[in-house]
Length: 146
Image 1 (tube, one colour):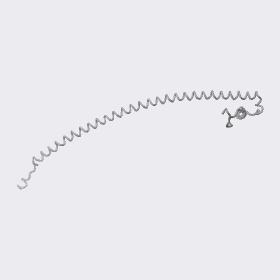
Image 2 (image 1 turned 90 degrees about the horizontal axis):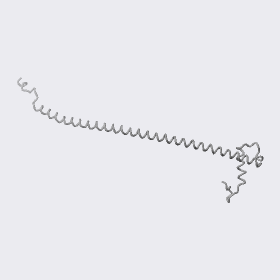
Image 3 (image 1 turned 90 degrees about the vertical axis):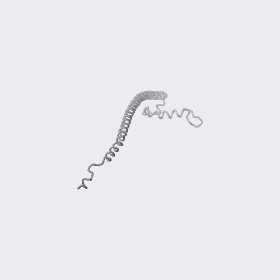
Image 4 (image 1 turned 45 degrees about the vertical axis):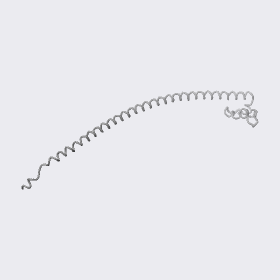
């Protein structure tokens, strides 16, 4: 049994010093990882701030563009309304001129040739043909008024 007592039950001190040596290199790794983590967190914060700034700039740009579009829309609507008014005035003027021409033709006795049943619109095409026949022609045979 002495042989069994001679086996050491306690580990030798050398392996304990090896454990301390193994622990020591791990501490710099922890410090390096902690530093890396801090750098990453800082970069994330910077990216979040950049994103927030970008969103604010984008929102500002969108608002400016919407305001500009709104102004352009108002301006365009105003111009369209002016054009409608001008076209209505032109239409009224043309109708008045057409009525004047019809009345002049009637006074000249040409209206009797066209017939009383033809309205102002129907008479317009016939009146244009009659007038075109009376216009002088250029060298190509076209009316000089065209």
